[in-house]
Structure formats: structure tokens, C-alpha cells
Image (tube, rainbow, N blue to C red; front, side):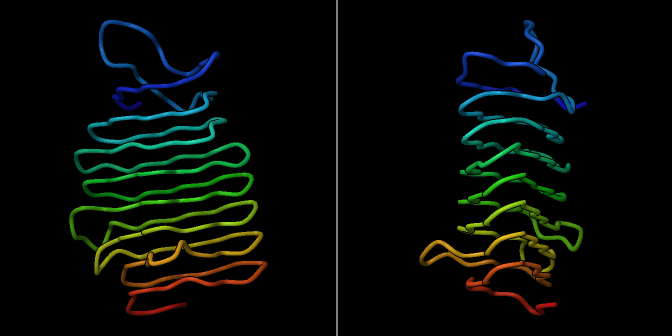
Length: 166
């Protein structure tokens, strides 16, 4: 369970309760065109949406699973792990952990092609990228972290600032 303030543009929405207090989201499915969330200590979202952005302000993990293709525009964590997944193609424009720490790891697993903008796990956070297609980058963007693990069925074309690639 996590405390989230959520703005969704959609004709149908499930998984978010409506009340006078901030919505609570669990691993219920959300269906929306655009989702923007603001969490205090964690975020756990599953659903069908075209674009997603959000922030977790205090130490806590973020887990996001998109059904189908999606664009994650801006996902920012104060400290913690981010586990992102999509059953289709995924574009991640920005994924960042703002505080340094070895436990601040980023993991992305997609069932299609993965296009990366800026990924920043700090100098000590590890990054894992898995794709059943190719892994490519947006021009001028880099993957930054300590250790980078890559697994792709297609080609890989990214720029990195990492200590180790495994």
C-alpha cells in the first residue's frame, strides 16, 4: 500500500479509491491515457497507459508495470530501488535517483524494444536492462551508475558513464 496523489486522464479508471484523503494504490490495474503521481514513500503501479510521470519524495521503492507499449516521461526517486517493466515497447525519457547510495538500483525489463533517455543511479547504484528487442538511446543522453548489466535479443546502442559493464 502506498500513499499517492494521482492525476489521470482517462475515460475509465480502476485501482484508485476516491475520497477526501490522498488516494491509495496497490497492485490493482489502472487504465488511463496519462498518469502523473506524487508519492511520499513508495509507488506500486500496474496498468495500461500511454504516458507516465511521477516522483517518490522520501526513501522508498518504485515498481511500475505497463501492459503494452508505454512512455515513462519522468520518474524520480529520492532513494530506493526502481523496478520498471512493460509487456511491449518502452521509452524511458528520465529515470533518476537523487540521493547517492549503493542500494539505489534501477531495473528495466521489457517485452519489446527499449529506448533510453537519461538513466541516473548515481555513482554507486547498479542498473539492469533487459529487452526481448533492441536497446537504444535518445541522442545526447547517457546511462549513469556503478555496474550495468545488459541483456537484449536485438542490438544495443547506448552511451554510458558506468564503472563496470557485465
